[in-house]
Image (cartoon, rainbow, N blue to C red; front, side):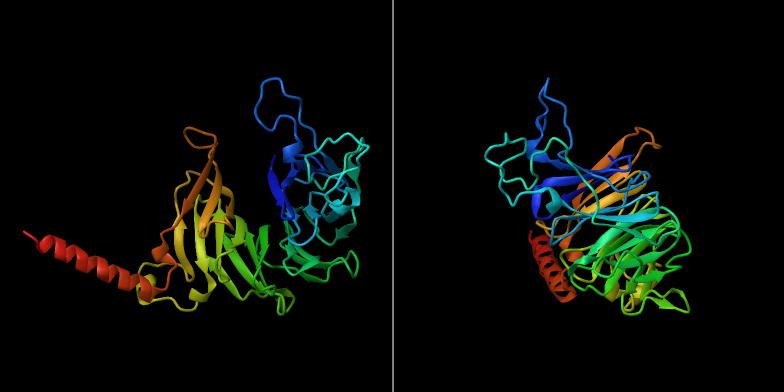
Length: 341
């Protein structure tokens, strides 16, 4: 399994990308061996989404507002499906033997497969990542090995609405759309950088025109994601083994101390706990400022992948005046304690 994504409308439903053209949909609670029991029946997907002509391995997204699935693959296409094409509205046919969990939105079927709502053509190389617009289920974007960022609108056809021909100077690996400001899109690239684009002004003289370019990695950027806790904050992970936390508001307000330390503009935390490339990470929407990150440590002594759950110190993101006041109180307490006989 290369990638897994949860359906926001029902967290028992997940989609997976493997080394094949199909996207597999699973009702976790309905799987017979969900609890590692010896002799349990083999798991089979509850739904198979067809439409790609070649392997679709990484680009996968679920719509935040409707049960829609988006995928990209080696066939250079972006494919859109609706799980509603094969569901009952949270009920099942009373005459059918239930093969899925109670409350599942997947209808039992002997032939659990559906075709796409649309196949979108515009990339010239493999599509590496896709993302829905947070404010519209019909709008989405994609990036690929052709260095292009493309915006799509399913309401107007299957051709690009906007195509940024040279968003970076190398392959694009990842993209994310700001959930608080639908004008802002992040892209990460093999050129070691993260770019922030404004949808209202994407290009200049035919090439990508980012609002800001964040340069703090020393290898290809593999994943970017906006924070659910603050609209100006995002993370990026890369093949250099680091997961960087940025605040674009700070990018133009670099302090003298940060300049002396040679910190890239906007960078305010760097997680260095992984031994090798950090291939994916995710912010925890239910636990503020908490992140789960995954690294591929196969090439390092010990081997195997590593999953880490961590949270940075709140002194890094709380208001500066509040933090300084707390430190002053702590300082006074320490002085008082040390002065006692």
